[in-house]
Amino acid sequence: MLIGMDVGGTNTDIAMVGEEVASEKISNARGMREALRTIRAPGRLAVSTSTPLNRVLAGQPVAVQTILVPGPGLFWPGGVKGAVNHCGDLVECIDPGEIAGILSREHGDALAIAGKFSVRNPALEKEVAALALEYYAEDRIAQSYHLAELGYPGRIATTRLNASMKETVTHLAGEIAAGRGDFLFFKGDGGLIPPDYAVNNPSVLAHSSAAAVALGAYYLTGITDCTVVDIGGTTTDLVPLERGIPMMDFLTFHGERTVTRAVVAESLPFGGDSLVEEGLIPRRLGDALAFGGSHPTLTDALNVAGEEIGDADASRRLSREDAVRAVADYLDRVSSAVSSLNARHLVGAGYLAPFLVPEIARRSGARYTIPPHWDCANAVGVAVSRVSLTLHARFDSGRGWVDLNGEHRPLHTMGDDDAILEMCREEVRRRAIAAGAHPGDVKDVEVLHFNSFDVVRSAYRSARIADVVVQVAPGISVEAR
Image 1 (cartoon, rainbow, N blue to C red):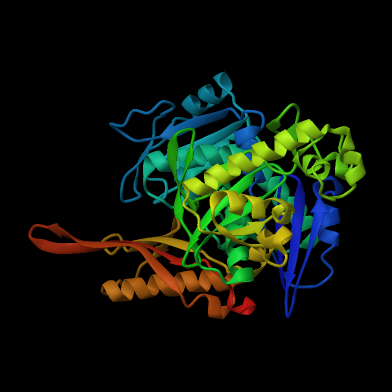
Image 2 (image 1 turned 120 degrees about the horizontal axis):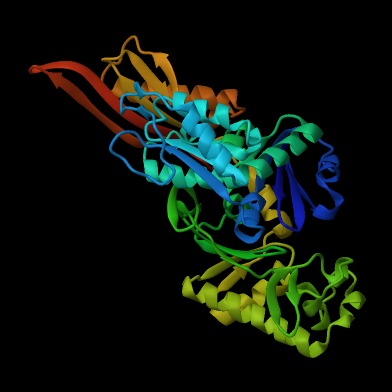
């Protein structure tokens, strides 16, 4: 049995995929333990959520203190003494007194630590983090070496984002593990990873709900070219698909590009629980009146306009004039966004899809499909996905080591380019299977980057260096086909 769970801002959706598909929607007011209790069958559990990033973007601002170890000749705000060179050699130690002084004078809600070449030797980052434990809880400290990417500005931006999200992701991972045991997190690029990967790099969960609904829509309909309109409680996400695959791009955070790739989705700040007060307001104050809430929402406006959703009589507190205006406002905004994407076929997802997507399609001149399990399509996408891990490797025959995602290992023989690539493919396959991947899911390994060159000294080749990035491609597991 493949089990998927999507933790949204309003509800937690659960899907169980075996010989048939079953799905259920649980209000977040009932809590995570109650949601987990509804899973009565054994099987692999995978979880997606965009709530940690949404809390950073829309919740109370998180003040992130940053300590950088850039090395000689590089001047960055927050930079301190200490250096690791491009080969991973420690060439200058940090000054513990300097670090303690900074931490005692300045203090934020979370701490980001990033060294220039820490992905090749994380010793200085780890030393700073150990000193910081006197001032910050461990789940509020993010280190950049976990990212494995070499690009320093992007790694700094990602580490700041991770610091602001880490406590929330750590808490969520603990809640799920306590109630269920082993599980996997679903990334924003459509693949699965063990929870400790996400705790060390929470940014990979960003846009995971959008990635999940894209995969679920394709699995449920088989439509390869479309735009998924996912109507949630807080937002409406538009996710274009081409040949069954969503577009990918790097996340930006506070205007800075990170090293994290995720599904491209246009998110509109309006959903079924958006507040109605003389118009539609991009704010959520709880459930709709029709579901026991205390404020009128878009869902209530639909009831006043003639639908029967939940306790429709409870929605009558809202005037018809305000209801009609709110529904029209929503349809105008979403239809305009759909038209700007030149969408020709819409796939509706989310609880309100049958009530709103037909009119959105009519206004934008597109066809539409409402698939089975439309209200939990995101959870279906999570359930049917495969484990997808990325391996960053650097080979250095002169120093006799290979670095695999920041871990040094002895290198006894290097071989030619083909041998290097095959070694990396086998390593990422081994790691993916150890993380729970089905052997049939690890056959497709993508080479994302490869570069090798000789080191020449005194006219003779003295060493060879290679940089490689490979990934088990995200997608639908063979177990779901």
